[in-house]
Structures are given as structure tokens and as C-alpha cells.
Length: 94
Image (tube, rainbow, N blue to C red; front, side, top):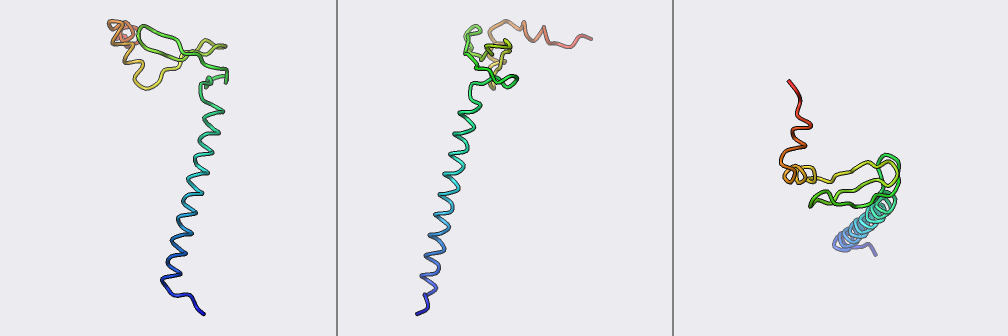
């Protein structure tokens, strides 16, 4: 007996949903793997980062190369606290 078009449609939708779930699981696993490999690691040398306070702002510092790594908005928050020192420091001279 030949399956009806309703049955074929049901199984096609079901297979598409399963494929979508498998893809989501693969992406989630890959994301978790990358996070565990790179999260809180120095982009320069891969050493662990530690969080320190600069005024009221928390920034990440590399334990081996002493580099500072700022997340989005952290530089602006530091500038707001320091009375414009960073802006004057990095202002191009004319």
C-alpha cells in the first residue's frame, strides 16, 4: 500500500525537526568546547586571565604578559571615572 501524501508530509516534517534539533545540539556542543578552550585565556599567549579592579570597573589581566583586556564598554566606564585622563593621553597632538 502506498503512503498517503499526509503521511509523507508528516514524516518529512518530523525528519526536518529532528535534523534541526541535531544541528542545534552540534552548535551547542561546539560552542561549549570553544568556550572551555578559550574563555578567560589571554588572546596573546593563552595564559589564564585574572579579573582585577580599575577604579570601579573590573578588567581582565594576563598573568604572564601583564596585558589588560577590556570588554565592550569598559574603556568608556574607566574614562568616565578618571576625569578624562585617558582621553587626553590618547588625544592626537596637532
